Image (cartoon, rainbow, N blue to C red; front, top):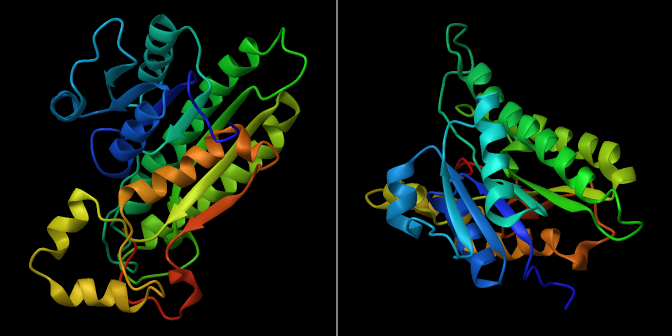
Length: 266
């Protein structure tokens, strides 16, 4: 089956909650071996368990902004499953700030968190994928999927740092796609709008006007579930997308088709 990821090994970052957690669980249900990676070890254990020897998943806790942590993540993956076929960079952060305040460090912080962490991890995993494919004359060597946002193409007064960092992530996706194409590694991204994650639920709990803003600016008139992003990521991870690379797949219910966007993307 071209959409199958059964038997493949995937690393999913930002996997303790929200979309990252949904993707990790979805991949596991589809028969993949999954490394759930996140800084929050307690939440990882609460949401997915310990990941005992012999199971199809493991958890990994650490700060992936540190190069040593990236090396340890790769080593843990190889120790558990002997290879890595898929990387999903789902760890990302959003901060609200004043675009005209020169003392705010939001841009620097989010470039480090949303861009550089994904770049360094992609570089390390790509090198492993290349090594794995040394004796493989044809066929895919790996797939890297970055989680981006429609904020990369749309603006909001309080989301300068987030928009800049996700736009940079999109360009990184294209650049790595070209650089890694000769190695048969595909690099794509999924840019989404508002998804009903735990954090968004908290925002909407006592804020009906915010919910109305989001739905009112979404042609499909609803907020996506995390599983709808997971399906798009599976497509890009599978052989069904074997001739797709350097693309930013938008999953937003048509929201980017409408101007202006009042509510920030989550």
